Picture 1 (cartoon, rainbow, N blue to C red):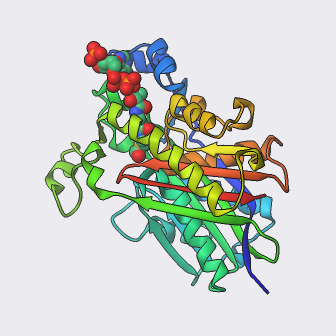
Picture 2: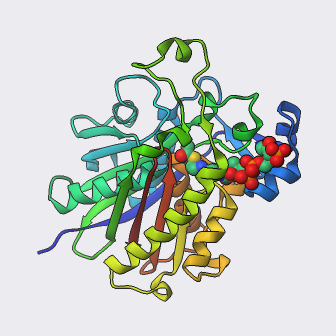
Picture 3: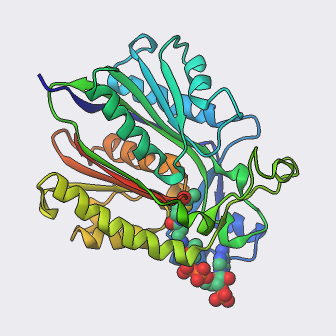
Length: 323
Ligand code: ACO
């Protein structure tokens, strides 16, 4: 019998503190109007000083486990997609495992920046199809506020903190129909944090390790690349645009989202948009949007959903789901 992987629960968590565009006007030379018109963002959530990526991830995970009716004993794989891990090690997945009182299962992090959750979902799909796991906890979680230059108006208005999660279970019914994961490291200079542990630790320690981005060039690449991955995903499944009920895109910029929706000839009321509420939360943004539309009843069982993301690396990917 063929084993499939299905999403049986979703969850998300946003930190309590909200920074509105009006608040951003007090921090850098910007306006609410510029931010809304260029990005669609109205506000972002910021983690408290004593709140870490693993805390956000654990809160989202608990919500997903509740929806799927799973306890800690059921989970046999934990994958956390994050660019902002709590520590160099243990992995954030191990920290989440400990917070959920889970012992012994496979647990590791995935680093694919904004495409991280789609990568993690693709990996979980393969673990389950291979029979190596039966019930995976897949999380995207970030505290991007910690790596922003709060004096740089071209980046600090764009990002926020948050987490989203999914329970992915073995099933005899198709769930994840396909996943498509790509990267091209030759574009690393267009979007990065140029320092880390091995290269420029002194900059990290002095608080100068920030997101840098050539926004305009990233924008054009994102629109073109996401257009191509829509075609790749449809072709791999012998489907046409009209077979897709919902688009759940990476939440970076409403103009990029609208361009992908147009490529799918999809009316905006079948595109899940949450970027206005939390800005770009990198690996958390796709599962945050998915959870929002599952919980408010828009996405229903049996419907076909396309997830897609694009981010630093460059990395990009998609997954087609039967809910
Ligand atoms: N407030 C006011 N003005 C601003 C701000 C701001 N916050 N930021 C930039 N500007 C100014 C610029 O200085 C520039 O002024 P100038 O014309 O006098 O030089 C003007 O606005 C236009 O700047 P552009 O960069 O050309 O603006 P653009 O329309 O490209 O929008 C944006 C910028 C929103 C960053 C867009 O390029 C974008 O969304 N890029 C893609 C982001 C993305 O998807 N990233 C991928 C995922 S992120 C990840 O992987 C971590």
